[in-house]
Amino acid sequence: MLTKLHSIMKSPALIKILVLSFLFLPLFCLSQNPVDVSQEIMAVNESFMAALQAGDAEAVADHYTEEARVMPPNLPLIDGKENIRDMWNAMLEPGPMDLRVKTVTAEAFGNTAIEEGMYKIHAPDGQVVDDGKYIVIWKKVEGKWRLHQDIFNSNRPAQGTGM
Image 1 (tube, rainbow, N blue to C red):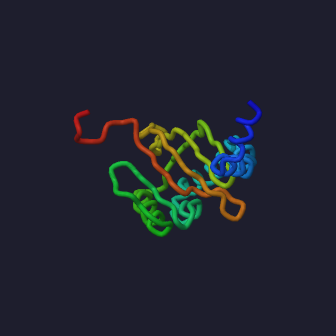
Image 2 (image 1 turned 45 degrees about the horizontal axis):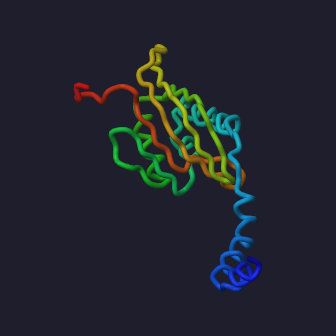
Image 3 (image 1 turned 60 degrees about the horizontal axis):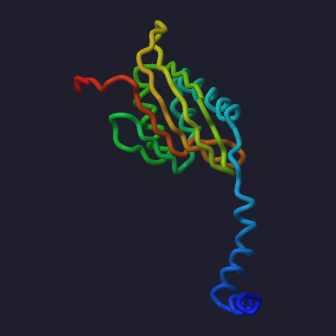
């Protein structure tokens, strides 16, 4: 039995596997566990909502990374911070927006976080005119969380679909 084990250990393929296993084992052991960053993300969301309520598309866009992408409902993909600012300018054309978001979960893996949430948009009289859900992938840039990929959609049927 000992001689059989000795001959197996002399196998070049097995030695490579063992060496590689020992080299990469620390990487697997050090993999990051998710960290709850709900409070940090909600603080940024408060600032985001305040910018919308002020009707300030420039301040809204400042919450995004330079390479951000937004996937709004019933519109094509919006790519880049400048185009995102233009999108928010168009959405704020009728006036400030009373958007309220609620973070359901927000977990960070290093400098990337994933947030799941719900939103409501209120008319000036307080009536809810839309509600839905969203997913945001956040990036920490220069110590600040910024929206990097933003997708949201309404819980209400699209107009004219009959659904």
